[in-house]
Length: 220
Image (cartoon, rainbow, N blue to C red; front, side, top):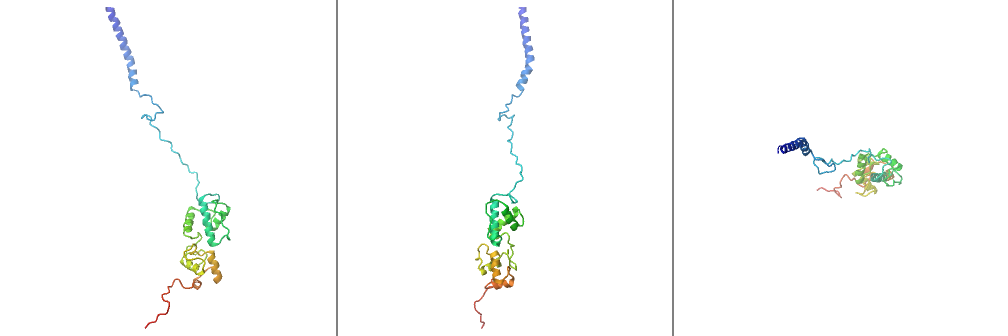
């Protein structure tokens, strides 16, 4: 009986020893975080990184200034503007640019003549577009002062064109002193420009002074 008790006590001591030795490890194992799946996007401890945004690095290219080598719709519009300008001022003897959208040597030569530079800036292009939409050549001086000459623009120039039969009132170029206007003026007075005196001679009547009556008024 006494022997049996000793065996029981020995077993209990062994069990107690095992519990004391293993308990901290088990506790630490329970308290430690579970392994994280690096591919699990839903795991709050492993948030999905923000997607990498592409970095746009400027390549130094721009539509402007338009220059030799430029291509596309803007160049095509530029060529149309130059042809419109040349048509008004008779600068190419009837030979015009092909509107192919290719800024080649011929376009460059005409750009130099019209814009005074081999390149066209954005500001110049936008101004040319605005004038073209209003039927005004880019080379117009936008004034209507005497003497009227190539590039003059305004109501007095329009009255002169109508009187000479060059353009009808309201037509494209009507307010512009064009190459046709200059040729007609030279044929009439021998000069390419019109001063104030000759201006009123060329007009059938003074457009600036209204005709109030058709016959003399008698007072009684």
